[in-house]
Length: 213
Image (tube, rainbow, N blue to C red; front, top):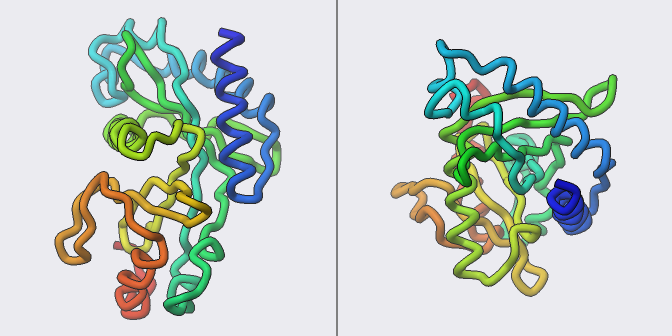
């Protein structure tokens, strides 16, 4: 367990360094570990499938997987983006870290830790479909790029319902769509230059009325 915690801390440190942010790594990991114990108490015979497990007892022996930091692209900033501008400037850290929850060697669910006024705390439990999508995309992309998991982070554009994994190739920000988008010609799992991605979605951002979708 100590090796897993140390490795997770290294991953978070690498992700934080790549984006110019810092995080209290030991604290985040410790909160996640305590939250996993809380999660096991929240899973019941009535909700275990909704939480992502095959049986109510599966969570009792669950472990934490590789953590991934979360970044947001705000609609107001996206509307101001000009082609050729720095795509990195659009990334805003959310102070959230998602930990996959593994059982029997498979990603089943997740625990998300977030920074609040009271410190780092568990923000959400569950979300099995989303964490499985992130984890499977990460696994396949890592095979293609040869990069380790520490090189990746999540990038969300919630206003346009778009989700990516981010990584760097020769210091250039790349984005990997989590799902296909025929309209924007995004293919799930295929990395694209972030500058190209943002240039493609700016027109939709400018036409957005600001209401939730």
